[in-house]
Length: 111
Image 1 (cartoon, helix red, strand yellow):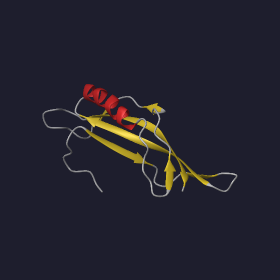
Image 2: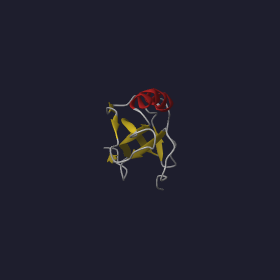
Image 3: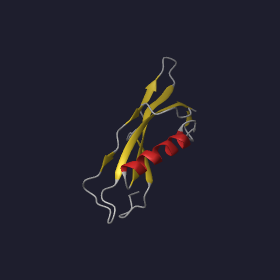
Image 4: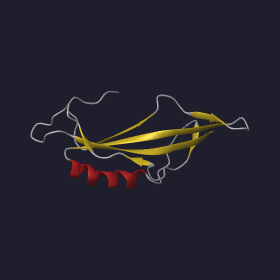
């Protein structure tokens, strides 16, 4: 899937590693220990700062669904990056889009 050429603002992009970060336990089970990045994009820095608490409220306590993992619920982000702006892309009439990233821990046990 690719991003639209002219995205609607705001938008949130969720991403993780390219492959499962599995860890084998002493019992021989496989556990998932990965990260979930959440990029929040809006037209201004203030809009990103307004969007971020709404996104966090929707994610904290949410349990991702998986057919192969029993997932733990998401806790508060372990890292939040400062708001930045994209100098490569300009929004006509608005300037440059701004974005920030929160990082969450993603844990699960294979079913």
